[in-house]
Amino acid sequence: MTRRTDVVVTTIFEPQWLDGYLQAIEDNDQKDWVTLRIICDRKTPDSVASAAAQAQARGFAIDCPSLQEQEDYLHKLGLAEDFIPWNTDNRRNIGFLRAWESGAEVMISIDDDNYTLPGSDFIGEHAVVGQSSSACTDAQVADAAPWFNICERLELNTPAAVFARGFPYAARDPRHCAPLRARHGDDADRMIAVNAGLWIDDPDVDALSRLALAPRARQAHAGAVILGPATWSPINTQNTALVRDAIPAYYYLRMGFPLQGLKIDRFGDILSGYFMQKCTQHLQHAIRIGSPVAEHRRSPHNLFKDLYHELAGIVLIEELLPWLMELRIEGDDYRSAYRSLAAALAADADRFTGFVWDEGGRQFLRETAACMNRWLDTIDRLG
Image (cartoon, rainbow, N blue to C red; front, side):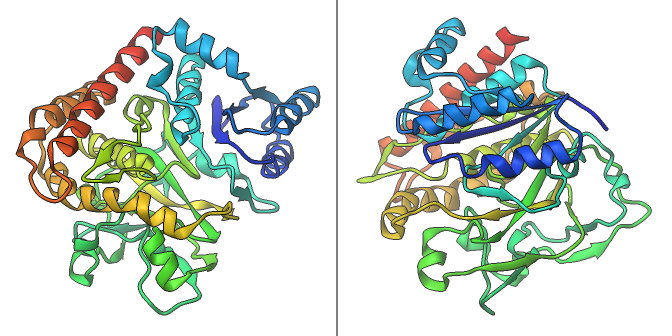
């Protein structure tokens, strides 16, 4: 299936990840319909733009706008420069907007420390988005409980239970975790709107888990999992594909907001994934988890610094997710559903009280809702 596909990444490291993606695209004859959108930042080395230019010379479709070109692009869209802050993962939103504007039918978001596996068809395996869930003949279903832990699909180096970053601590009990079952003939036939790929080596877990367990994934289990209509799982922005219709609900949330003496960070993708997932469930679409598998060669991190930045997010989602799960939204497409969600977020901000829910915490929700609406307004202007 040759649908126009855009791969979006933001990076501040050397482009060691790039060759693997180019090789996979070339090996699978995908150069004519796949575009790599590399969004640089102020910390990005010049070698990234050089590598992008070399790939272009080899016939690959590469979009690697300079910093000035990014500023000009935001100005053209009527967005203030600080709407997408420098030196943050939020920069990938520029790639998302350019993918939408280009007419991409499939958008894949990756991190610059995710590497393709030799011989894999990374793009082709993500092409499952837009297909019917009934076409996933090898898939099992996760339902009968509100949560599914995607780390169960990994063969790990520890017998301890390991949960993906963003999985609520209140749900880390077997009673809350959905078992897997075979598909039934009476399972609803739903469009796969999102495909979340897995990772080997360093799984995407939070700093608490890394400090306590230091998990490593030797391999991922074969076969896919389809989440049930009311079963949730964290979805990040690394190795994740969306069908075009879902892109308006995948705004990467802005981080850095002070909450009760902390600063929320490293949860922009997690909150984005949950908000998009709410819209997917509302529209009765499906989320698939499984292939393609990437190797996560995690870039250098100070785990104690990560923990400091993650703590506010961990506390926030513990209390926000129950509200989100019970919330009723309206709309018959992703744009209207996402706008309904933004309205509810702003309207209900004052109801939250507790550790991080001082006025700063509630203001974070209001400002997030305002950014979501500004994002949708931009999507609407682009068509």
